[in-house]
Length: 295
Image 1 (cartoon, rainbow, N blue to C red):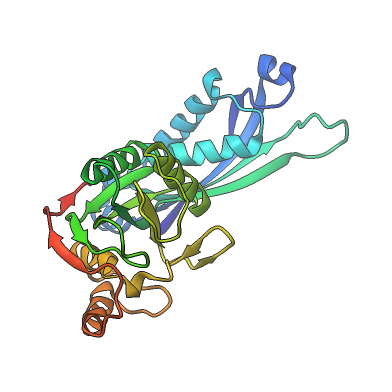
Image 2: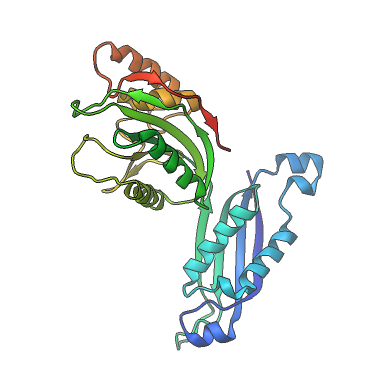
């Protein structure tokens, strides 16, 4: 990857908390560092295979000049601009934006106030499950809602599988699937969005391992290792759950686990051996559909 840098582009915008800032506007300076694969463009000396920084400068200027893009906080302005560049420049994999406010109205002398924000496309993998209501329709709705999110580019969706319940076994069979997508949502943002989808589909968190209308689990977020009170990634139970490993092997068999280095296919083979000993959760009972490429 290469970095294309646009440094200290001067724009006019109306960002700020105070009414006079919104009314009168002021100058800001913007630096954008864009991560781009320039291998093909460099070898072929072809601008069409790269990112035209002149076009990007015009885009930034027009975006910031537009009054409807006005926000109060410069961190909001920088974040939205970074996301705008990711959405409108297909070759850009990551955008690091520094927004400087030269005349911040704080009543004290300073050169400028600034904030730097980085957004990037990251491959995420999630599992979907349901065993209450019209499970197939609920999984379809969840997939549709994910695809409608501006910060998500859908990848592949596995077949649907009917699987045995685990933990609390006296409940209906599950329908399960896995899907991949690229996203610039941060992990906590993505988790919140997934939980919103669960709630909209009637999910109530009453019983651990109990029946549920919809269950969305974040399995992988790029190669990130995350340990917080709300989120653990990679999901710690991946290698024990056949209802995860089977559909995941179907759509991404060579995906490596960031902690062990084992591929999905290698983990699946190990789990197959344990299946005979009853050490797996959610045994596959039936394959119900074929995988879909959502890209």
